[in-house]
Image (cartoon, rainbow, N blue to C red):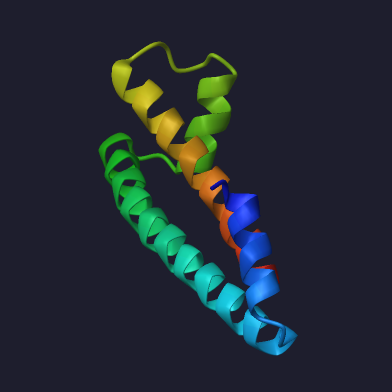
Length: 99
């Protein structure tokens, strides 16, 4: 059974909208907490790069994207990590609006 069908089944099972809202809200809170934990792990890694290269990640990313820093493997890892953080921040923002 696909996810949308499962959600429809929940909707049919819980005729009380408030109860269904609480259940969905709890699921969203779990997802939000998972994303926050992942973001913290990624931020720890970003701080390691920032300390090693003495540069803020946002500044690094702009300079790297502009081609100013070269092709060091660390820079590709740092860039990917920065992009992951930005993506998770966006997801956290959307989840916070929904919870």
